[in-house]
Length: 94
Image 1 (spheres, rainbow, N blue to C red):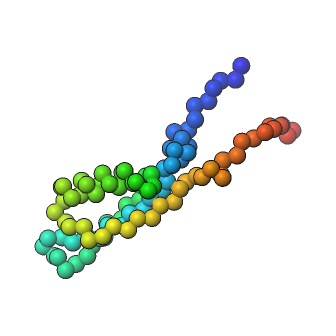
Image 2: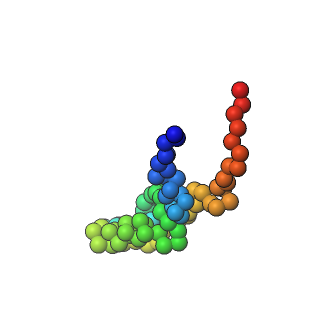
Image 3: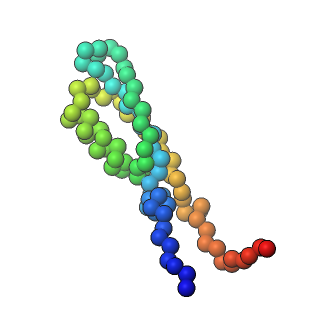
């Protein structure tokens, strides 16, 4: 009797909408207000709400003295419905 396989957690995340997100935060430090500095971050998140990015930016606003100038976000879904196909027949090749 075949054993049931547990689906890969990463694959399940992909199917639930997670994708690779890149955020670039431009910010100014209080002691050098004329300089724009950059913080870049790549992570998995769900578009278009970006809950992980929102938590990070909320933390930044509360805990970090640097003022955010702008945030640029790019997102790429890791898998889409058109990329999943079910196999009808499975054979063996000797």
